[in-house]
Length: 119
Image (cartoon, rainbow, N blue to C red):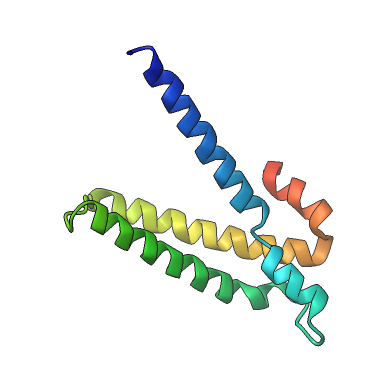
């Protein structure tokens, strides 16, 4: 009935939040594993930024192609959101790069809470 729709939306929102949290929580695991387990691996966090960004770009392309298939090659792309989306992506990339540096300099247990709740 009509009363089930808010519950369904809440469940979908909770699932999406849990998925995002899991992905967010393992964001640095690949580079950390390499730094800790591969002999001679760079300890400079910035050396891993390009690889991570290439992976993010590749995944975004795949997600967009899936979206195009679902929309039967009629994706909704609003031109007015392109510039704000691009600018926010650049800001995120700068912040993510700084986070790699913070992890290298402070360690994960100190950098993580500072980055998440700092100014």
